Amino acid sequence: KQPFLQRAIRVLSPRLANQIAAGEVVERPASVVKELLENSLDAGAKRIQVDVEQGGVKRLLVRDDGHGIRQDELALALSRHATSKIYDLDELEGVASLGFRGEALASVSSVSRLTLSSRHIDAADGWQARTDGRDMVPVVSPAAHPVGTSVEVCDLFFNTPARRKFLKTEKTEFGHLEETFKRVALSQWERFLSLKHNGKTIHSLTACHSQAEQEKRIAQLCSADFIQQSVFLDVTHLGMTLRGWMGLPTFNRRQADLQYFFVNGRPVRDRVVSHAVKQAYRDVLFHGRHPAFVLYFELDPQGVDVNVHPTKHEVRFRDSRTVHDFLFRSLHRALAEVTPEAQKVANV
Ligand code: ADP
Ligand code: MG
Image (cartoon, rainbow, N blue to C red):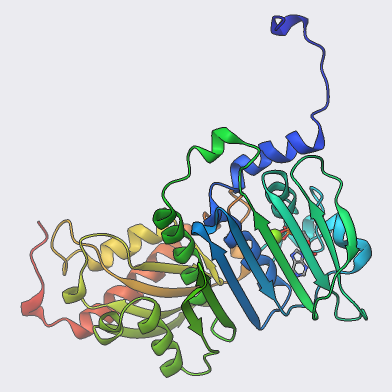
């Protein structure tokens, strides 16, 4: 190889550019499922089936009954920076869809063997586009499919051995994937959702139309104990709403493994949120124990920037101080109402 100084500049091939982008978004089967589920949700699907084999590494299928994709747009859907969700900066700033970067399908298809099958709601028949992870030119052909879309991803990372090496055991990969499924199931009450692993049904969830039905779903996904030992809160202040279930101090955990926080429907990990929750539980939990919660925070989309990281797990609040105070106060008050003074532990 020549020294860098002597090498000519070239534009990356589309496949390599996509594989580099995939490095940011596609870490493991769970990240593929996250992207595919978000696409199904954005397409208005009522029923979404996830069917995986060998932790999702061998094969992973997400099938929905959303609006589908037109035949002449199938190949475009697989190319990079192609999206139907935003067309300009104004739309980005008020973005309400889960996706908008136009990168997921391109990224996934560059590191797997992918088949995108769909029938658009206005079309008489279905079509599919296949890529084999070699070049980025999909082969489009007719395919039987009801209205909606299926994405099948086989042999993830078969052409990127360095990434494949980082995959863990089937059990671990499936664990991550199930966690992703849960986050969606906990925020998309009206949808039928199912998850199958190696032919076995792991979760099968019907639509929830009431708080009681939501609690049943949470019991199924998280544990019946959590729902029994939690308080429900629903607080609105200054256009912000916090709703959900917070575990009683007595239902504390050794690990922070039952903590779900959604901002405008998106599962989020955020320092401002974590700090507010921690503060609220500070006086009622022993040091080193973690609270459990399933909480939904709604605010004006203009008040939060979701375009911080490609996986969109992080957000930035415009007015983080107000958000922090609102969260802390709402949680603290709800806890104070259910925690007799005597039960409070000293802050050690
Ligand atoms: P993004 O979601 O950021 O737009 P993707 O690469 O995930 O980018 O998808 C590209 C486009 O393909 C989407 O904008 C959408 O128009 C279309 N698409 C992908 N998945 C589906 C689906 N399940 N149903 C309908 N359209 C879809
Ligand atoms: Mg997407």
